[in-house]
Image 1: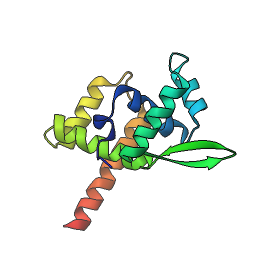
Image 2 (image 1 turned 90 degrees about the vertical axis):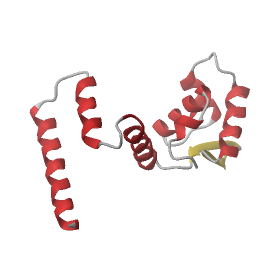
Image 3 (image 1 turned 30 degrees about the vertical axis):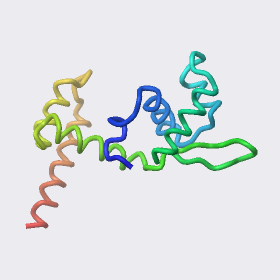
Image 4 (image 1 turned 60 degrees about the vertical axis):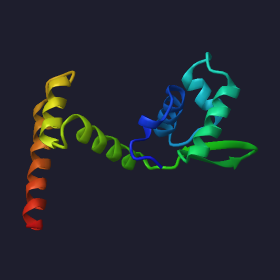
Length: 132
């Protein structure tokens, strides 16, 4: 499985994987409904087969229907994508990436959000001091 999954997918493949990550698992019918009626049942089915051949999704049979799910847990996929973004666009610098997130945030952070960030920074400091 590729580290940054969406970098190696077509637009349609990426849309289907997004549905599966949001839902956890889904049938072709459910995926098609989420993508909109412009996508045919056969197109979704064929794309899922391609995703399965690439190793990005798997399926199980339930009541005569295939139920698809991602092969990578969502937390791992998030981690891999963020690692790729930080490496590619921020020269591997987490502080630069975090600063950019503050710049593009739709709203200002409230006190609770700032306190949560401060707690995470304190935890990172504790972890760093334990390693040294």
